[in-house]
Length: 431
Image 1 (cartoon, rainbow, N blue to C red):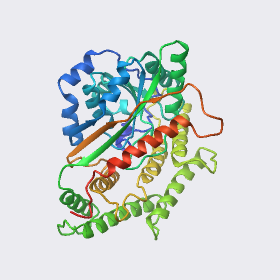
Image 2 (cartoon, rainbow, N blue to C red):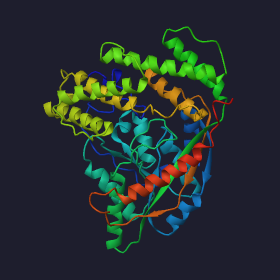
Image 3 (cartoon, one colour):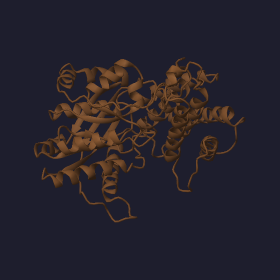
Image 4 (tube, rainbow, N blue to C red):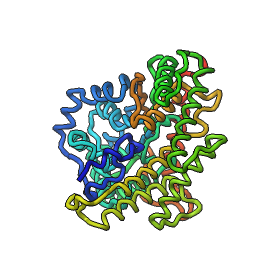
């Protein structure tokens, strides 16, 4: 069978094969030993990885003692960070080192299918798989069991995926509160104590010359688009229009690729129209019904699930059928991934008067991912890791038909911390 990755999409986590068609899903359990995670910490392997692969060269911990207190109290501890960069799961290793513990973390199954070494390393650092395209009971039960036994803190990213928007929070998934509440009920029934949730805010701050970096990266993008690169400039009044032009060029290319021609007008309605075109085409192909209030994320998840279900329905062992052509299914998976990726360009992120150096870097890196397949992690970063006070998880659900009170509290806490941290970035409009 040919390598599906050759033409597979780059997903929102920066990896090939969001939908895996080489074999059906199988749960990857966490490694529960302490030898490997202890060795990783002792040898400072996460520091090397973050410096080399993610250009995250420094960190600052704030209120780590709050986590220490919860662990010392014997609580089942859930860490709920915002998810803004691919480095997020690894930088939490610095927090674990500070409080002398190891972590378990839920990770998308496709991350275990990039290469053998990464799959090996993920498990040894405490990760276990979740099948995002379906109902993964085994992953959920594993997460609940970790909280009930209080063996280690559990990391769950309540946004689900990342899209390089450090100052904005995506809608939170209710699976996080379900896992926490179920574990709290089991602990209460067994007389084992509490389950607590710590919101954790992650904020990346640029350490280098952002204006020079932005100019260089934009000139490379302009060259990739066969444009004559603009002369070097550190003037935000020149850099920001160039960034807008490159964004518009990428959108026009995708319109031509999928619709047949580029449209005119403002970027937001054009983006939304292309997202709707991509999703509705896939939904018709798989006969999926949508409701008026279905989010783009929910529609994308449903399409991914339909792609995998349809592909494996033809043959449960595709590897034994060399004549099988996964290409049509990969095309549909790529369309769903593109729709979600397009949504990761927030409308309000580059409003005049609110533009920081980190926002410019994130926007350029999203475009690099779109054009090159991978962002250029060349801007030195420092990450601030701030731990909030523990939220005691009630075993009881809120009133039926009302917003989940636990999720609302988590959302409010994270937003408050992220707004405060966003003010620590430099104003890009004043170099």
